[in-house]
Length: 422
Length: 104
Ligand SMILES: Cc1cc2nc3c(=O)[nH]c(=O)nc-3n(C[C@H](O)[C@H](O)[C@H](O)COP(=O)(O)OP(=O)(O)OC[C@H]3O[C@@H](n4cnc5c(N)ncnc54)[C@H](O)[C@@H]3O)c2cc1C
Image 1 (cartoon, rainbow over the protein chains, first blue to last red):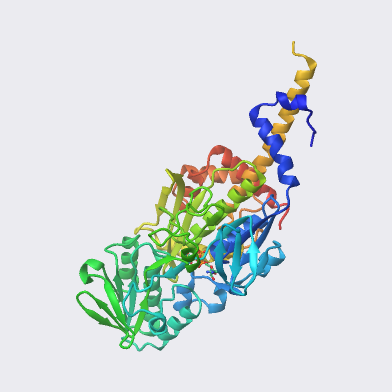
Image 2 (image 1 turned 90 degrees about the vertical axis):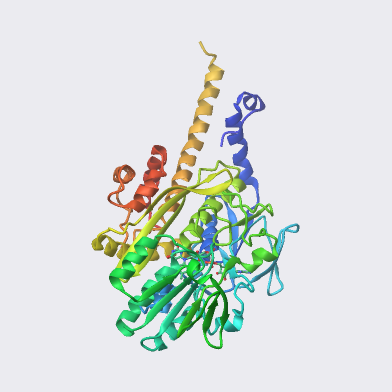
């Protein structure tokens, strides 16, 4: 780079001066340390994009599990359409190809004043910037009787892993004519269309294996997204098999009884062969403990940088945040993570930031060869993430278009998991 | 007529700005291409979703402009393209076109 004399400096315009001053700053500094807690979709994406950015950053990823199991496509596993192993993704590529230090531990506490993260094994990590992406946890006492022991009898399968296997075993051993009950929580929760996708794919499995089975959905809401598309598909593929009861009919689920596998609403008690209870949710425990959540139980953030509105220097992405119009989906977590990584990198380098593009694209299965899709783009407006452009599949789409979407979904899974885990 | 010294500085300035302009353009292209990578593998692999590697800048630009103009062929790409300015389309097309010759 040209070295400027004092006189030349004096003549530079403001903008050019900024550019000239910023470049040596980025080069002269020691590598900034960024710690990312949570190696799920949001956290792994932030780590990867920071590690591959033009800014030199030292990235450490803290994640207790050796392998991540995707929730997306776990409904296909539940219906016997995909092996469990195909949902697993390791961290080797992030470590080897991208030079990320991956530590398989849980973060126990965050100390914002000291800028350190304490791990469960007693060690401490210092950071210049911290990114927290802990996903969700379940609200205590949201449903009377639904505790840790009850989860082993009436699984949620809303974090993929052993819970998914448990629910699959229960479905497989259900007798023909049995009732499969799904309890849907109040908004906001992880992946709004997933309970209805689950009902669709369980029905598709039962149609072959247990044709007399029934699926009942007890909803905490009175309507849901793409309801017309789902209900049209249920009538076409599984006539009479799936019943959906909105909160206005039942008064909502208030309690469960694991001993009888029953679900209690204001007006009635429902007993089922398999009961899949998806409880009400909030941001992951660590976010609660670190003071990153507000009264809602979720984390308020700046919609451009994803920096916490409560703790400066700490960024949050994924299901844990108050996402405005952005749903709690893997696609959104990935999209937010990229915006966050580029914002942090630009900040550390003192370089210009480009307007981020935030999207959600979702493929939802109605049957193994019938999927629909939606696409939404978002922009920060008055401090909130607002949906600006939105398209969703229509009821009258041809079966060929739906078949193509089901095939595209497979391709999406491959490309997307490659984007996140390398 | 301008004094010589001033025009020399002026040239220097233009150089500085255009250099950082080129880097900025590449940075913007990389950032936009990150969006593509959520569905399209940038190493050219993958099935089910068409590859965008090896198409060349012009085809990519034309495809994005066509997606922006109409919803009919694909509403996902329509939503994405609608959110891009002409300048952004040019810079993402240029960046993605370069990935083909240099797969990672
Ligand atoms: C049935 C189902 C189907 C779905 N289908 C789709 C779909 O088709 N498309 C889509 O886009 N989304 C889908 N989703 C939603 C998607 O899975 C989530 O939105 C996504 O995983 C959110 O990413 P995240 O990074 O916020 O959280 P997660 O992916 O859950 O990651 C959080 C990570 O943080 C780690 N962690 C937590 N606490 C700590 C700690 N203290 N220290 C260290 N690490 C910690 C956890 O181990 C975990 O790995 C689906 C969800 C479900 C349940």
